Image 1: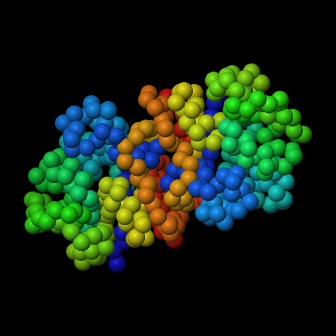
Image 2 (image 1 turned 180 degrees about the vertical axis):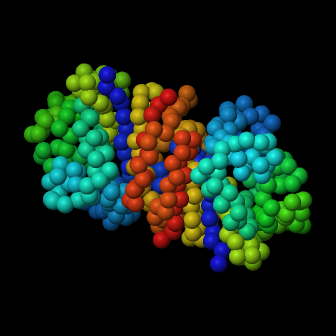
Image 3 (image 1 turned 90 degrees about the vertical axis):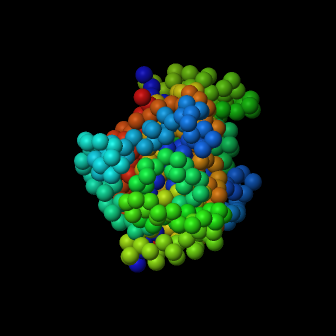
Length: 212
Length: 212
C-alpha cells in the first residue's frame, strides 16, 4: 500500500517559503530579499549530485548520505499532490520536461483538462478536495508512495485529515522572519509522530517522523 | 567572556508552551489540555538523572549523552534572565529552594527589592530593559555564561538585539496546534546561525546553533 509522505525544507523559524515569494514578484527576487532566502533554504538540495543530474544543472555535486536520501525519496514517489499556488509558480518556472516524472494531482477550483508534459509528468486538476486527490493519486501510483509536495496549506489540510504517514523535514539554519509557515491552522485531534531518523549534515538537519 | 545562550524545548510545530498554559488556568491542567502537552514537551528532561537529583524528584533516571548535556548546560550558567510571566508562573510553582542557584534577572515593570531564596538563587527585578539586564547578569556571572531562560517573547527581544550567541533547542516530536511560538516577531537584520551539533535521542532532537 502507498505511504503518504511530506518531504519539505523549513527554515529554523518554521517557514517553507519567505515573505514576498509570490507570482506577483516572481521576476523580482530582490523584493523583500525572497530570492536570497529561498536560495539559502534550497542550497543543501541544489548541491546534491542526484538532484543536479535530474534537473540538468550540470556535473558535480555532493555524493554521500544526503544524496542517497534524495535519490531514495525521489525513487519512491508514484504520484505527487500539490496546491494551486505551487503549481502556478512551477508552471512559469519548470523546464518543459517538468521535474516530477509521475502523475501530479493539483488541488484547484479551476476546471482544466490534464496537461501532459514530456518525460512522464501529467498534471491532473482536481476540483473535489484533498481526499479525492489522494484516492486518484493512490490508484495511479502503482504501489509506490504519494508525496504531498506542498505548499504549506495543502500539507496542513492532509495533516488535519490525519492522512500524513511520514513527515520529512530538512531543517535549515536560517531565519526568515516571515513567510508561509509549515505548521499553522492545525486542528484537534492532532496526529502523534515519533522520531524515526535524524540525518545530520552541515547545511541542514534531516528529520524524519512517522505517525504513531 | 560570558556567552549568551538560549536552551529551550520546542514542539515540532514551533511552540514553547501550549495554549491555555497561563496563571489564570494554573490549577486546571485539563484546560485545553495544557498540562498533558507541557508534560509531553518536558518528559525528555524529567527523565534525566541529573535533573531529577537537582529537583529532588527522587532516584533513578537516564544517564547518557543527554544527561551529560543537561549537566554541562546547568553547570555553565552564571546568571539567568527571564521575563515577568515566566517568573510569576515559577513563583507559584518552584520549591522554596528555587532551581537556579545563580542570580536571576527578571525583566519587569514592577519595582521590587531583590528576592533572596535559599540555595543561592536571588531574583533581581530589572526595570530598564534587556540590555541593562544582560549587563547586570554579566557582571554577576563570574565569567560563566548567561542563559536567556524565557519566555519566548524575552528570547525574541534578545534575538532582535543580535545578542544571542548560541541557540540550543530540544525539538520534541509533538504537535501543540497553538500556544506561544519561539520564533515570532523577529525583525531584520536577522542573526545568522550555523549548525554546531545535533544530538539525536528517541524523545527529542537536541539542536545546537552558533551565531556566525
